[in-house]
Image 1 (tube, helix red, strand yellow):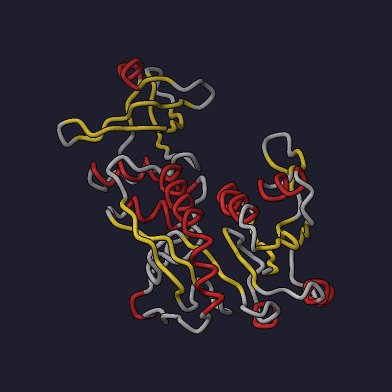
Image 2 (cartoon, one colour):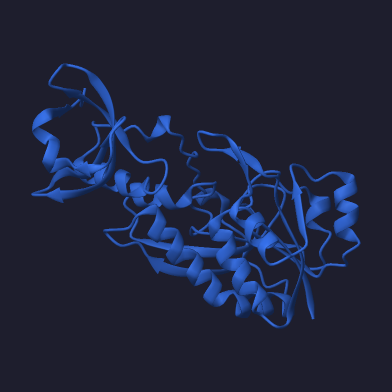
Amino acid sequence: MTNLIFFGSSEHSVIILKKLLGIKDFNVLGVITKIDKPIGRDQKVTPNPVAAFSKQINLKLFQIEEFTPEFKLEIRNLKLDIGLCVAFGPPYFDQEMIDIPKFKIVNIHPSPLPKYRGATPGPWQIINGETKSAVTFFQIDSLPDNGPIISQIPFDITPQETALSFYQKAFDLAAKNLESILKSYIQNPNNLQQQDHTQKSYFPKFTKESAQINWTWDDLKIDRFVRALNPWPIAWTFVTNQQNQILKMKIISSTIINQKFTPKIVQIEGKKSIEWSEIVKYYTINKS
């Protein structure tokens, strides 16, 4: 029996955790995630998807903001064989934490490392017009997305890809191969490939502010930008109505017609989402 600890915080983490719980040779001794935080307009304190799922099925749950000496001691006492990390984020692992499990900590990252390190690899691959990607299993070291590669599984990025479909595809593929890759790694933990750090690339996290469309881009890139920021934070721009009011408009989906970018579903601030074709005569997109 392999004793394992799981690190994660997103809905993508839950995909892997569910698969992990179904592998009979693995014993999940605990789940480590972030503390419950206020979200939304009403700032209601809410558990993240991993915390909510773990509470629902009564998994031993650790909710932390840092790896304190007391916490490390508690984890050390579990006598772990391996850690598995999926979309966990900070706090970042120091060497002491990494060395607690016998076979260290494995991370699953949805990009062909060393390319597209960082917290938002999916959207940036779509924006940059990549047609091929991979989900990478690698051994964590003390630098983000820097450790040696255990396995890479390639997959295609389609012309209609959104961030939602990209991540679903990547983590479904990781889940499908999870058992074979982890067992192979444990049997031969030194069969690792060092990353070529000269080929590394990193792109920043998105915010609501950075989701503003850059109209100097070509139409195909703008369309990719819209797809890449779906379902969050949603691409947006300013529009002017017939009363010369400047308003913010989210572009939820778009299409390319005769090589031209065309919004499909939009949402003017304060209003419900609607087909752009129904309101185009009332609004002008500000492209300057």
